[in-house]
Image (cartoon, rainbow, N blue to C red; front, side, top):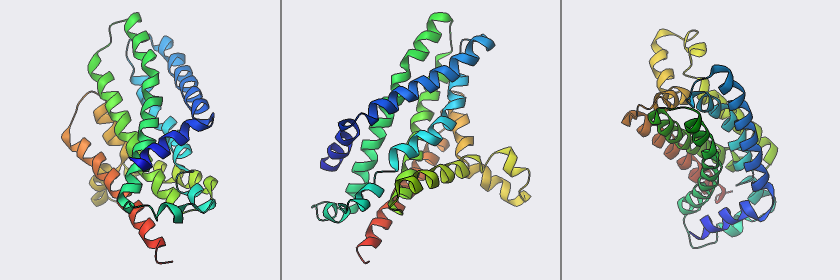
Length: 234
């Protein structure tokens, strides 16, 4: 909780957090409503279809400073002297970043309200879309935090984070699987972040998709803990 409070407060000490949320809302609202009135359908499928690509850039922007900044200003060693384990430190940073991202995503609540005023949308895909947004956002955060833990440069952490998330997102897409050997297609389809997002987005809450996202989050948080532990032997 001490690490969580420290990290969460750090987001709002500077105006960066407020600028981030405002830019996020402007971009998502503009792109969504630009197509919404053209399609003339009361649903949010267009919004959730854009979200993975928007978060692809916004999430690494959140995580790029998490560990890279600690290394740059030489506070990581001080942090590791606290009476907490590496796992607790990683979880504190992850939960702080997730809560900040959740605030940004939930601030778009005006979109479903507007859609409901203009028509009668099916609540299932909207609820499923927000659930998938939280799960995918958490997976993105775990990847971004791990990338930040293995570099001291924030710009490198941002670029590598974008590349890593992009690869994991498209690896199961038809664009990739059509060129892959037949034996690898089921594996690539399962690994791809995008495939599981589309399932939940449709309002179909499948336990396999939830387990998949929790597994991805756990795996990259584990890698994050291991990267911290390796520094103690340097």
